Length: 539
Image 1 (cartoon, helix red, strand yellow):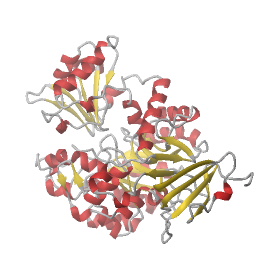
Image 2 (cartoon, rainbow, N blue to C red):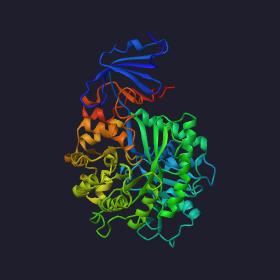
Image 3 (cartoon, rainbow, N blue to C red):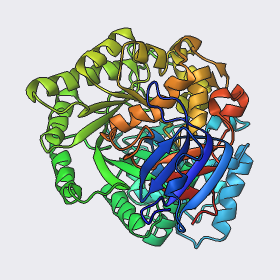
Image 4 (spheres, one colour):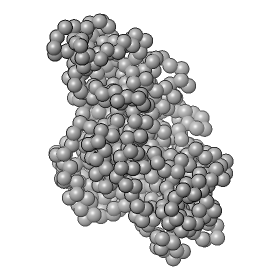
């Protein structure tokens, strides 16, 4: 034995390195936060064992790299960890009763928030609650009900606090909801969210850190070792920094600082001034990736070339004027940061590619991967080819489609929904594509996403089977391709000596699981930087 041995030795049935052409290995040694050595012989690294080596003999296990979720919202998950769990409700009365229970133990006048990962079509009534219904749960507290990142419903107490009346101007790029009689119904969409949300006090620092501790462990428990959090405010990032110092993060975080709600380059410049303090303050666990813009709306307002199926006078909305967005994106790239822009509908995809092409032309020599398309939901063949020609990476989110297919069919019709997130088309063109969940709109989970991309299953059946991809391709979108998106392919994405020891251990080989088993398969262990972060009793 040697004094310079391994801290961890795993002997497994198969270690899939994801290095093309390399046969499965049987032993993997870790020292510090890096992979030290590998062997095709399960006992081929025994010479690295010392008195301090932790040995895990797992002869039936499969080892894979830890997965990335390249477009998700861990901040929302952390906030929701202690919010009213309305995602458990199956009816509006149950939904309201959960809020009523929280109101009973909340001092009058304090805000009540809900979790965000629910869909109204999962309720028996198949609709959102109204302000009047929320009033029946409590009229002594302002209530903020969030669904995903684009939709709020609030009670009348909250509307009064915000000064919202029937005469309030609708913000550009936003919606203030009304019922059939023209009265406010409590619904706020996109750029109207801030009319109320700026009034909601942030949870205290300790609560937020605990929320991130819980949520990041939940992600890791599904096999995710790195998240790309795509809407992080400067205040959120300060909490991330504090959580990192307390050891509360169980995944690596690559944060996109949010420019959502902004409409001018001047506002973005102010944001960039704030970001300067973080330029050189990153570590392997936590760093700023760049800036997040939103070009169109979400499920209800994605900008489409053809009118909506439910309203032939509506084609979604663009939140930015293209000329203004060019100036704002240029402000970011000239400071050396990257840009990820939400573009969901096909009109938004076309407009974003126009914007990005102008930015490339006016700023020659930008590093590859500087400009990224988030979602590219309805990108058709022509726009996919344009993105590839321009070298624009795209992130796709099959779990979003799975959970919202029925909602989206109501807005766009089945033909367009079947064309969402065309992974096969992207890969056949050689696109730089990677995958994620878009939690809280889609459910996070390494194999849940792989299952979705290989089957095209949704909550209402298979949609667009011609866009399905193979298991190996789907895994690559969450590993090597994801690491490349983050500029970390030399550190993560494959299992080779010298790379970070981010790995997952599975009690069966996911490649050979029946489809229904794969959907809900989770690893027995997740290691990040050689540290066991799950199961829940990991120290």
